Image 1: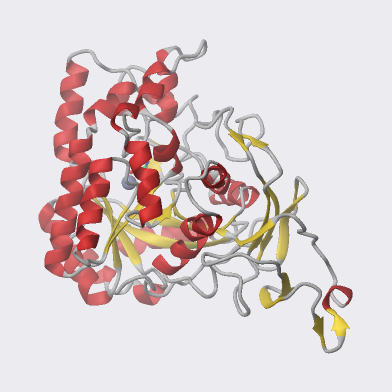
Image 2: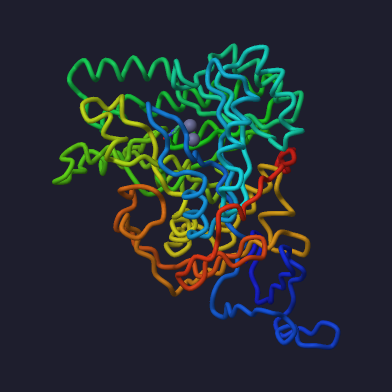
Length: 466
Ligand code: DUC
Ligand code: ZN
Ligand code: ZN
């Protein structure tokens, strides 16, 4: 299955690379292909797809006074288990740090530790003359995208003047601007007012981060991007009103794109409100504290988002994988939602959760491949090597069994988390075999990968822009 069609074929992998895609039973140099290769993987009755590309992960992210609980080692292993063979993680420049130092620190964390290939976007957390100059060197480093935050004052936040200046560099260099679009200063006032009124349970995180905060920031980002000529990619879109802003801008023919995440397609604020366990009581809801937040099921956000995946108002699905354990991490906010580290871990489940959209008739098989692999490759300058099964591409291939079954649980997942935001989810499908640059890393429930197999991906400019 590719982004454009489906058919029966044999995929020949030679070393790390796809050598040929052949009609079943083909001969090469007068010999049956199947008889002349070292290894045959029988995928009869299953889907053969390009390995997943998760373009939004946060391994080891320092956030909320702690670090995201997956290292590059544990996070990329979990990704491989779930049929994802490349990630693009966010190198972080925090306020007061140099961009180059933030990037070097990220290389150090990842090098030699990854099971699958990995690239970086650059978070620019302090836009000033130094970081603007450093951004001009990113493309040569194989980093063709950077992310700004309109949220989190005092941590990663950029004001409009900083956004404008960074977008001017984006326009000059071809770097893709990625935006966390929420009005952070206004959110922080609302959050403080809720807390002062004694409303400190996890659920109020979502009340403070109201959809108006996302719509407004999305609009502002679009306008600044259009003014400067910068291409814009809005991360983790959750509000239907923000989708409409993107759709409107795209209708003008502008280079504006959006990503959503599985949590915004399946989970709602009401479920979070209702969450309760013996162990955590009402604090159970902290498992779903992420930003942008889960949206109300009453307002049709989820339905609108699935529609946007069909109409291409939203182009791709990443996880925003940002795992924190309940014990010792999320529980920092036991008395106040503002201190709960934000994030959900899903890097292992994205291919399965999106396949469920095929099963339920919301997207086609081809669109599944496009949303999870081919578009991420094109968007972030990897297409040809990644995102497609064709001669010359890396041998990143997943055999997916539509007759298999997967039950998601913290008891069986491979992410370094003491809970799952997806506990008990049933998937009508199963990742069978995962091949990463020609090496079988997962097969028949066995893991054969090793840390250090994954290499740094020097990315080119986006291949998705007009
Ligand atoms: N959102 C999250 O949920 N976690 C990390 C950063 C972010 O923007
Ligand atoms: Zn974000
Ligand atoms: Zn993120």
